[in-house]
Amino acid sequence: MKTRFAIVACAMFAVSTTTAARARAAAPSTLPVRGLYLGAPKPDEVALVVNFIRDALPGEGVNTLVMEFDYRYQYTSHPEVVDADALSKDDVKQIVSACRAANVRLIPLINLLGHQSWAAQTFGLLRAHPEFDETPKKYPNNQGIYCRSYCPLNPDVHKVVFDLIDELAAVCEADAVHVGMDEVFILADPDCPRCGTRNRAELFAQEVRTLHDHLVQSHREMWMWGDRLLDGSVTGVGEWEGSQNGTAWAINMVPRDIVICDWHYESAPPTAAYFAVEGFRVVYAPWRKTDVALAELDQVRAVRSHPDAVTAPRMLGMLQTTWGSASDFIKAYNGDASVPASSAEAAATFKALFSSIRAVR
Image 1: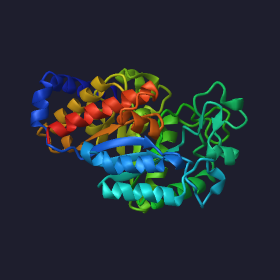
Image 2: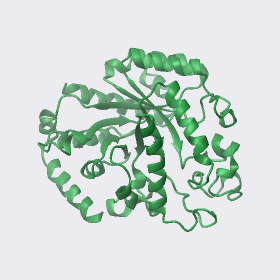
Image 3: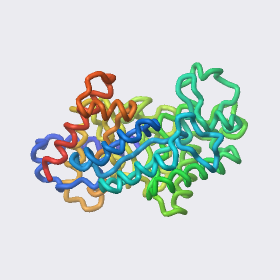
């Protein structure tokens, strides 16, 4: 892995010596994925989101909306996991209709494996099924950990997870599902009787394959975050944007038809090109730093402008993340200065990024 990444990094450094303007001029005019990530709105915010999708996204050139639902949909297959502020089927259908009218592909996101809690709150799956927890009865009130994980070797967990995936994909009329899988720090916990002695890379890869194979059965594409497939030390991106707990080798054991969302918020390392060389289709995912987003876009354009007919098309485009409430992001987009700074910065980055994307159409 170290040698392969070094080769890609050197190649991207050589590309970066070409001016950004030259890369833009040479790049294909339209990126296949021009995406935005939003969290699912609260029920009383649905109208705001629907209007934003219909009125703003076509003009910005957005053609893909990744919306994170998790347990904030009123699942009928497993109502025990549903959060209090969950959306109804009618609420989601309004979003689906708006996306169709705006010619935007809707990809629902449900965080799987990790991100089963936040701060003191344990989310729906483990709240309703504590037997699925990788670390049951450990870390009271979630103190001392980042986020809980479910145990991927629990014999019953996928019966529930598959039902949730299928129901969410169906109500969203989606041909792809984003399964999260980022920032998994609890895996093969030594106190877990099923996976405590397992190799973390093999275990992570097994869960990726399990989810992928289920989606393939319904002819749906799988999207996921890419950080656990990057060696945080070799790449220099550290333990958050990459892995330092042994999962990175899983990149050699997972299917290549997965779309990788390669998120980097503070700098623009050449990791998306690495994923493309490894055979994955990939999108870069910035957040709230405009210079980082534009640097990532330049890398996408540079690789796509290369005459290599195999690797270049795998660089699909961009996915702007928001990481705040959907309503705060939309209010910031509309000029409301009262929202949190992170939402204002994300909205400003989104505008600058998509202005640059549209500039070469």
